[in-house]
Length: 533
Image (cartoon, rainbow, N blue to C red):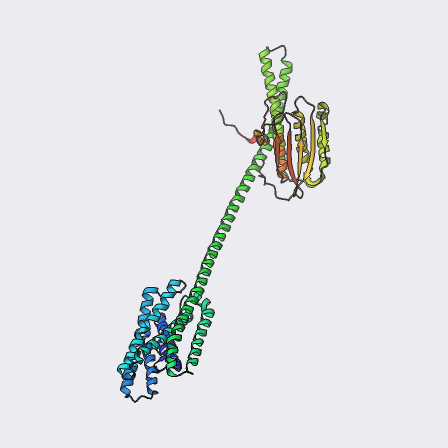
């Protein structure tokens, strides 16, 4: 009931104000906001508000009839007012039905086709009351001059159509759904349509200074143009603002989708990073356990192996003349194997030691480190006649004892694999953006480039002549492990017969990071139990 009363009062108030702009002979207004309000009420609140439309139209027209100079009877006024009210109600119902079925409602009116259909159907529905209202006046004898019949229908329709084009979108914009879309369009559309309404008022004011005939021609031509201009302007504003909001909505949806995708991606990266961190820690723990086992095993194996080698050597020494050649040769092979096993265990122990304990990082002159390495190789250098060229070297934060091992292994390899020529080696350093790049170059037999990565694996030997090139193949693995513990990398560039150049990097400012955790459980090789045969 409140909705019906509100619609009736609003229709009456707007209708009375609009009749101030009435076109002679006084039965139509240049713009009739009540028609737009009636259509908006049907669209927004449904057909249940039709009594409010009829009541508002009846009250307004009856009020006008009472104030007219005609001498018609009161029953006639009631009948005519009721007929016009029925026309106004049918007009709103027809317009609402057409828009709901053809355009669809609620509708944000952001599509150009929907906007055009909405305005055209709303304007066409105004023919209902224009025809019924004028016909009711004519039948009631209130339109005496038959020449004014068609003109009155035309003026009535123009006024109602302008009211629908201007005020229906305004009402929907302020009270329709979805509010978040309509609210963004209110300032632009409202201000412009209000300006159009004021322009219509100005045109009417200008026309009132002319005689009736001139006013009739003015309305026929200028108001027709005003209707077209207002319709086009309203359509343009609805389309432009709607398209802007539609684009903004799509941008917001895409932005939200991208944000969600970014969140999901960040979460996935976080999860994968956590999994990788756990896997790396498990791998580090496993490697630490293996290194610990290798250290313990190699340490515990040294004593029994030493005893085996000693007794074999004793047997070899005292068996001469007592055993035949084949038996002596077998003992010699056993002594040789035990000696090689001792060498392997010794190197394995050296490799395991690299991964144990904390790094003792201090500032050291690399030149002094190289001097220490050459001092340890004094006998080898003198016997081979090797020449070593040492260039300017920097001062860096390193573990000195481990870097001595690196230079010692690289220099000894360069001397060992020199072939028939006198070994010539050079050590140089070059500064890069965040590192120092060191090079150790020799003139030896070289390395096939296919094996440039394999040579850094533990116990990897590329030369099978153990008599001429003794060793276990652990030296370069130790170098790789030391350099990686210093957050650097090592590689080799070489060709067969053209020597080799080993490169490795050391950071200018090494980051302190935790070492892999070692299993604190003490593992003794002597605890290992072999299966009973």
